[in-house]
Image (cartoon, rainbow, N blue to C red):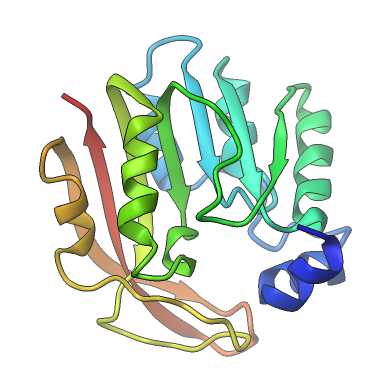
Length: 205
């Protein structure tokens, strides 16, 4: 996807381009990345979907894992590459928009923190099927998604909120290790607000 197209389609692509010298999500890992890092075997192969500015990709690469970061925004990937270089790790970055997956498995972990709710509900079953096919037996999937319990439209973005039980149903044949719902605070548009989220960590049998 071209940089101009990504910025027009994604408000976060525009935000990454507008703030080349600032990491808007910070450079520390998400709590989900910290959790899943304790479960991975050494030198696991990891796919980070919608990796943004690279904070979780870089965190997992620092722990010796072979990480591939996928993101639609060129500006976001520039930041991610700079963060990786500063931390002394190498991460292959793939510029693509979900549900496209121009890569090969198998992976030990498929990870997404706030990205797959931008994929339409009609396209998500096919995406999950492809992600499962890219995962080794015994491998993990870890996701944080926005749900429709509390809706806040931020920066004119289009979010396809997850319905109740939709994420859990996608992993009905897997071992669910963690599933919880909650609220996260945000103020990226200058207005303090909350998003309702669901977190799921599952392991392939």
